[in-house]
Length: 199
Image (tube, rainbow, N blue to C red):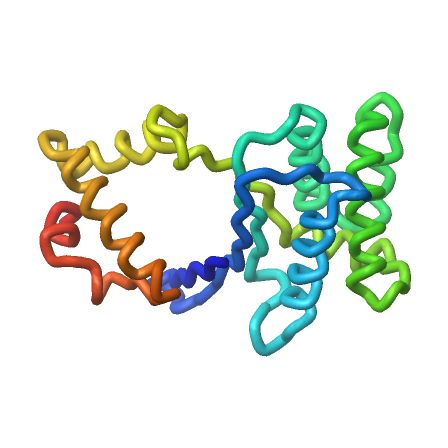
């Protein structure tokens, strides 16, 4: 649904985020939408022409999640902080650190990854590498008084205190216009008045 390209200009390092957006999702073994997301993400993850392992990221961007699904964000953080696949699996299996819910959510990931991998179980190392690159982002921009909107307004206010709402409205309009044509937004094609607001 969305590809974000970024570059560190000092070291000329480029990276990208491949994002799928779903308003509502459940991270379970029986959820077909979740299965479709994992199958597509696994294909992207293994496409060397599209995805650079260890640098690029994959994100599921979704609306508010159930508390049980939110628990899986900790499992993703464990994957990113573990030194290797064995350490990661041990973290998830530890009864005083993990929980039944976290193990259940990991089981759902494994089931869908098996489907994505031609019905062959992925190794612990492949699972760990994939989960290190996978992010679960909760976004509430579809409601008028969401937390994400308040944070974005705060960021804009660092540059333009007087016209936060006007700048935000211009950004939304630009995204809507480009989105209907599956277009590209870059610094070069953002309207000049928006660019000037952030100088």
